[in-house]
Image (cartoon, rainbow, N blue to C red; front, side, top):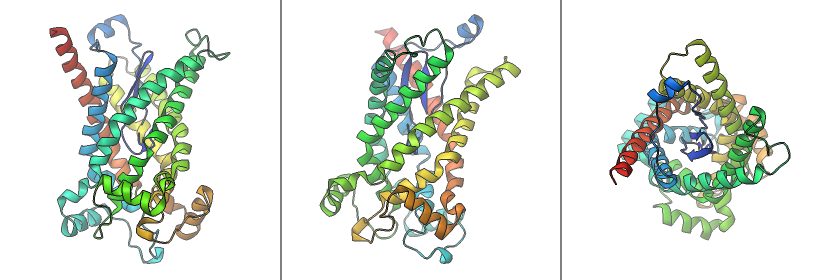
Length: 349
């Protein structure tokens, strides 16, 4: 869903409902169904809260996770856009430590969080739209032949969840895309500052490039939503089922955390080239600079491979890998803690 979107979007589906909790960039989809034995259900009883507290907990958890992993996210973006306006042969080998040191020396420590405010502003509407759209699409899909008996067939239920999640992700990504583009442009600025903040960036983009400029790279984003969800979902379910079969006594929360992290890594590996192309297309024409990829999405892939090789499509993958585990872990722990807190508040009332 993310697309942080590659997006980059952790979405957790509990039973029949969806809670949109994105773990960035783009975008991860962890599925946790309560299918444990009665004794395990008693031990791991989930706090019961309403829809909007559920959504609030998810939005806050996503914002906390994004803030904690923002330095790695910015490093990923800076590596991804290398080579756009530079001689590729002159680029030094990507080094996380070297780039982090440069940021500290030239821009200051606070620069690691450049663009993070718009990421947080993007979180709540994205989560809200994802949640609402998932429920609406699920009701609509249940009326289709073959999916109307989803409760009786595992395959139909799986298809319903994947289609509903994919459509919800596409809807949410499309409606909140301008904020995602602004986040990329703010984070990609180094010593030369053109955009002074969120509102100035939105105004300047509309002034310089028109309203359509707010949607540059949308095609790559939407193209990556379906594969990201499908890979994360299928890898997570396979890992979890095998793990529970081999080690049924392991802690359910830790199993979910481990499987969610591994599924996120798998999804990032497959969809990272799309995310890289998306970032570069988002930066097309910034501050009046010449366009580089003006012939479409697939032409952009071809140009990158021709000029930088296949490795060019994975420029910045290491910091992306490094942020997966802490991102999923922070979302999981924050979300569960907030659910428990909100459930306690509700019970006191």
